[in-house]
Image (tube, rainbow over the protein chains, first blue to last red):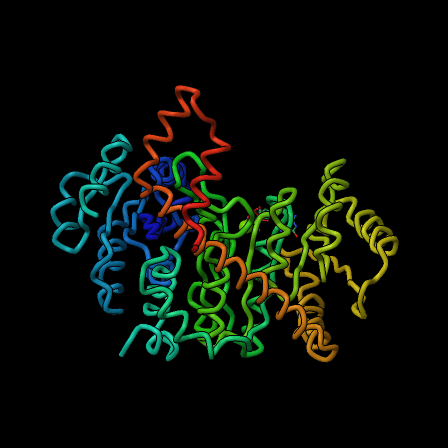
Length: 130
Length: 313
Ligand SMILES: Nc1nc2c(ncn2[C@@H]2O[C@H](COP(=O)(O)OP(=O)(O)OP(=O)(O)O)[C@@H](O)[C@H]2O)c(=O)[nH]1
Ligand SMILES: [Mg+2]
């Protein structure tokens, strides 16, 4: 009797103090039947990676408003690789300028959802990938 | 090397994957559990329960930090409710345990209760066994206590710690009715708030009325978990309870009683699934349904027929 659930870590790296966007997406994913591990504000890339491994998630969703995404997102990817983890899908969200997206994708972020993306699109994307 | 061996040698990814296999009740789960079973039984399992928002996660964070400082290995299982409509869940207990993420002595796992109606998931007991077999010295289980659901925790834990807070108003009576029996240790958290002393007194009175049914005198502690106040006393209380259980012989008898319940539960689940499967395959089932719809017979008679057909002759 297999009861597989999609498990998603929704994490907020960086120093900005808002997690409204992260909470909106967390609730939307829950309503789509997923298990969402929510870890709160100001997580370091090291903490995010440790949590992703302990929780054996399928997806890590990183949400950021502060502009440090070009540093923090690739850092999470790199640390995961260091630990030998390459089968977790990394998604980015938040306030991210169009021109940064190609760089992030080259550095291991599977997809970027900029602020204002309907949550339905994110869910559709996840379901198509798993 | 197989998953179990890797997990037992400290590979956290292997441990995490093992838990997923068991949590999803994948076919290999039983083999893994069989392999691990001989290595279980050493850990002290501590259940942390109490009303929503009472500070269970904050308190667990601080208790575990203290045990880790003493060189112990600790596993934490944080169970949150699953939405009965969508099957989804938000598992948010780690918000209060951020400092433990990078502690090498600590492993934290969040679980949705999934189909289970009580405070634990159906597989929580198996996840406890995995952590036990991987040589964690202490296993904490956090579960929300609302009414009856927290009673499940006594089947999983050696030591049940009930967290109370001031200012619950009239609810306290209702909550206490169920938890008074299950608590081995009580903690009045948020002691920085008004009314904490009153809660301690009320609890003490109710415990006195109940009377001790064993040689363990149920302690009541106060804490301010956010400020790490009262933590060391609680940790010592938890350790003392385990010593008491071992020395009095209660550990053996209660674990044996739980084992009996668990064994019967596994048997009944297996029988139920197998039998139901056979009923569903019954060729005459559709015919029966039509007959009942036409009122030629009734569900009660059909049930008798179905069960009679299943019984070995
Ligand atoms: N004043 C005060 N606040 C506390 C104390 N302990 C926890 N809190 C706060 O109470 C709130 C809830 O704490 P949690 O640790 O998440 O409580 P919980 O029981 O795990 O909550 P659920 O898992 O949602 O049921 C948080 O805002 C904590 O900071 C305390 O001793 N004093
Ligand atoms: Mg909690």
